[in-house]
Length: 265
Image 1 (cartoon, rainbow, N blue to C red):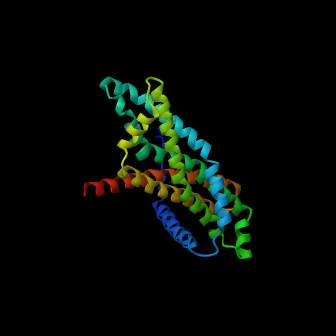
Image 2 (image 1 turned 30 degrees about the vertical axis):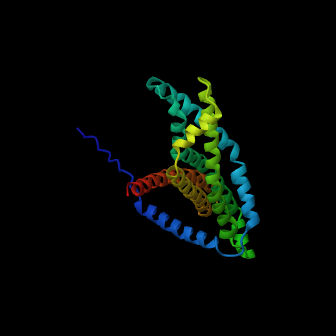
Image 3 (image 1 turned 90 degrees about the horizontal axis):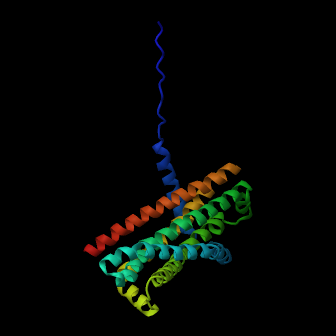
């Protein structure tokens, strides 16, 4: 009687070398982009244009998200504080949570999904239509005109978008708090800002600058490295969102560790 042959299932091998190659290419790309920040000609008009599209177009989504975030967070935490008779501490608790972590991280993830994917798709489409090659032939520097302006715009505007999100988050918290009890604006602001210190604001602001830089950088890099096909444009946008979101969590972790180190010493 013939024995059935055993079927060998080969496990797919993960090519770790491609990760290091991609990291090296991203490092070289970052160096080239940083040099463009200080080399003339400075594309001020393009920077303002990108700032409008990146900042103004994202503002409604950031505002609504921040408002709902503060509203829901207050409604979830208040019943717990009522059991301990500590509802007066709620504005300060919400303010610290939003300013330190929730506001920057949530806003960064939204910007990664909307801005980074948009930049990657736009630059990828420009490469497919050979606009990048046309710029190089005409003497225009694509890294300066296309990439550096977008990276600088995200670096400057993401911290501002985080401030707007935090403001609307506190507004949502104030409205949610007044649904159950009377809390004046003055008492809410005093209680919130008495809890927040510069040790909360400064690290949170600095890490949002890095959020913005890497959101623009990764979106530009993935779009710039896309092959000349329509499928590659969609793939570049998808990979840009995933990579930028992962970088936000890594930067946030590093920021917390660095802050803890300096506070302890």
